[in-house]
Length: 341
Image (tube, rainbow, N blue to C red):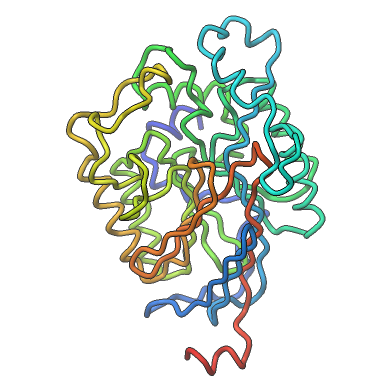
């Protein structure tokens, strides 16, 4: 099947292709028929979930916003589009120690941590790159493959954005997914894919244009209706009332009037009409899904947690500054069951 069919073809028929290393074992899938009862503990970058539905522990290392800027001679023809972001994160301060670091060093340290803790999966939710540099993409792919740890990748708005390049956000996303980012998807649909890990279904949905399309909405509904425990991975956080940002997927105030950076980022201005109804419908379905465990995101470069209709959304610090999330899904102990069941 040609690459283009994964982007513009009928996505629901191919989006279920998961990695063989991430598929469930042969035990019967346990469906959820009532709202999940979960203990959730957040202690800085350490996140723990406990629930009766979890049959065995799962360790996830979550990465967002590394903003790798490395490039070589292949990037010279694109320097007019990459120049600003190539200078944006050359040196950073570690989110804990405040010592000098860099995106490359931070990424390597996080992969080393994932190996040390025997992570079941590494989730990468976008802006791993400051622009779609061939060298940076090849370097990340090599580091991930060498780690031996399964991974899930979904794009962020910078991963495919060459600033000032003509075209709609959707067209540019499709172009650079096909031309550069493709190897990171490992044969899965770039805009929506499911990965089954020890009984939990991880849904990676690309909202890097700030919007959701109809096929992505239908994809989510399909998996919501299975009743399986779900984790949603997106780059741009879902909107949360009271969160002081002008964006957020499903934000009723998102649009041209709140777009302050379109000139700086040299991209089309957000639409006057704001989000599509499809994006709002997606937002509603996500937070009404009785089998949703949590949403994990990035984009903001600052750790936070929002609870929306009882569903936690956890945003990671930027990996450019060494940030990551250390996530555990753990079976509920008998003493804990007495407390909530």
